[in-house]
Each structure stands twice: as structure tokens, then as C-alpha cells.
Length: 356
Image 1: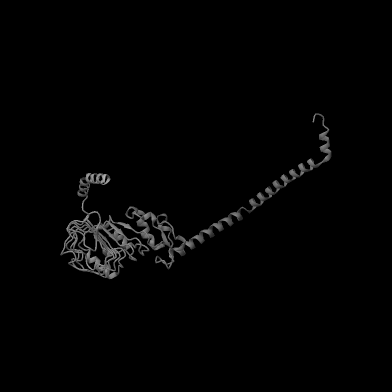
Image 2: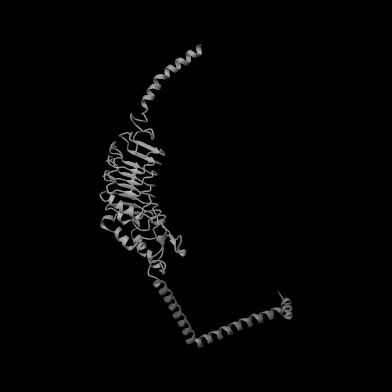
């Protein structure tokens, strides 16, 4: 009985402190916070909805949310009123990865006036309306990694990005074979083209990069199958002069031809790249001219050497004769010393000499 009373007294002492501690902890979910399909991390300012088969963005979101992530859903069509009925005035980051988004309608981002970063990566985009991003005037970063970018989709995106002031555009993993010139708005600062199918940048594409509105643009070109043939000369010369504009320039390597496979791009010289008929440069001219010139030089060197030998045949003959006589005298000296050392009479006389 005494023990039970002691335990009750000790627990009574801790109850006030426990109540104060619980009051000091902020609630993880605000009133009317995260919807049932999502969960909030730490505060309602960060909402993540993962692999819940949503067909539209959740409506019961905290008004104060800053970052919203919806992954693994089936949004398919991002309707024009997707966020307009329940606006999120403080939302800055919206990630919609792996959501099977195929269509983005006009004003799909209406109700997100503070949005700065939009991630639409890993979605099979097929149709993007011209006013798809009109509801987000502050959008600065757009991520379109692995969205199966086709020619028609590129044209649609060009219209949709026309009135935006993008600063960063990500297009990794889209199998691009050329610079997406139409998707480069004036004032763009970063363009990520890693893991595509670029073999080179042509002279015309380099002129676009040197246009007044894109001179500060930085490119990321890693993991592209660059072909180090003579058609790469304009890009290699540009790269050596503007290395600071390509942050991963020192890691770029040649994917072909076989003799240069794996070679560091910046260690090559533009004049050292050889043209062949199959490499898209000046078909066979430089290669043929190089071999012909090399053969002519070797022939001239051989002719000069033979002429020198012919004109100095007497001197060479005299030099050979003198060399032979000198070798003969040397051998005779060695032979004489060997005979003197081998004579037994001379050896015994030296042994009987007084004082030895």
C-alpha cells in the first residue's frame, strides 16, 4: 500500500511538467490541414502525396503550404481549374513526377501566383496548351526531364513558354539530337541537356547561344555521345573559348570514332580532328590531303639523303678505309700483347730478375 501511494505521489509531481511539454510542441497538422491521401512533414508548409492513385490535385490542402509534391498518381489531364477553386497563394515549389500527365490545359496553374519551380519530369506529355503556364507569372525553373519530348511537343512548349521569364530549364534524358532552339527564351541562365543524344553543336546553334539575350546561358552537356570528327571543330573551338559557360566541360569525353573513344574533349585541338566521308564534315578532303602531303615530305627526305650519299661517295669511301685501318691497327696491337704475355721464356726471365 505504501509503495502504491509513493508511486502516485511521484506521478503527480510529473503531470504538470508533461502538460507544459505537450503544449510547447507545435502541431504537425494545422486545423483543416493535410488531406487523407497525403501526409505533412514537420509543418503544413510541406505536403507530400506519394503513390496514392489521385486523379486530380487534392483540394483539402493548407493555404500556407509552400512545397507540394504529388508522385505516382494518375492525373493524366491537368485541367484549367485544377488549382483555381482552391488557390494556394504561398506555393513556391510544385513537383508532379510520375503522375502520367499527358495533357496540360490553359490556365492549369491558375491559383498559384507565387509558384517559382515546376517539376513535370517523368510524364508522357502529349499536349500542352499555349496558356498552360499563364497562371504562374513568377515561374523561373521548369523541369521537363524524360518527358518524351517530340517535335510537335517542342513547338507547343515554345508557345507556352513565350511569355515566361524562365531562368533554368531542365531537359535531361529526352534523346535530343539537336539544341532545342525554340525552347530558349531570352534571359535563360541555365540549360541542362545531360543524358541526351547530342553528337555536336552546329555552327548555327552556336550562333544562337552567342545571341545578345543568351550570352550568359550556361550549358550542362554531360553523358552525351559526342562524336570527335571534323564536324565537331566549330563546337570544340567555341568550347575552348567559352569553357566557363559549360560547367561540366572538363568531364566531356568522345564517344567516337574508335581511336578517340574516351578522350577528354578539351585535350583535343580543332585542327587535329580528321574528316572522313562518313563523319559529316568535308568528305575525305582533309584526310586525303594529309596523307598525300606526308608522302611527299617522306619522298623529298629520301631523295635528299640519297643525293648526299652520292655527292660524298669518295669521302665516305675514304672514311670507311681509315676506319678499317684503325680497327686493324688496334687488333694487331691486341694480338702482339697477347703473344708477349703467352711467351714462356719471357715469363721465366721476368721471374729470375733480381729484386722482383
